[in-house]
Image 1 (cartoon, rainbow, N blue to C red):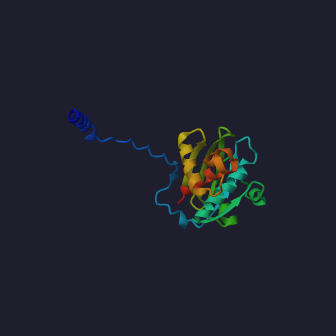
Image 2: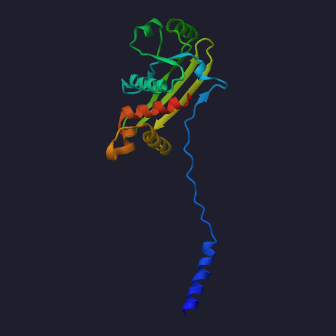
Image 3: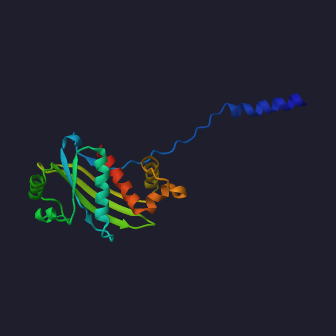
Length: 209
């Protein structure tokens, strides 16, 4: 009787042991999309000025705060010399810059001459929604002052309800944030406007490497 039970157990288990279970791999996280002119070596540019972004949001301070965060993250990369020009800087008025239009060829020449830079980064903030949605859309360009050539551009919305953005925020928090936020953990990325700006700026800076 016992032998029959053992034999039956072996017969039943044989098909199972011969099967291999294939685990489905998680889909890769969609990377940030951007344009980069072919053959451009950013390290050969020299100096770049970032202009304070045009602010189409309801948050009057967002353009300055996000421009500051972007400057900080790009500066960490040490790709090129970098300076920032804000709306309230006297140089802004002397260059007759506008936040609601493209930089003209004449303005590019003036920027190169007066600021001693080789390229200018500028753009605008759109689609802003504060917490709990946390959505910020950015359009940015990097343009060669001498030739007017578009070297790099990005047109992206960072929406905290997007699962892809959430996954990238988790990676950012685990690799870039050093502070202990306790039980809130990576949720601080979308809870804190300052950290959300840092997350967005970090992702943009990665596209310049």
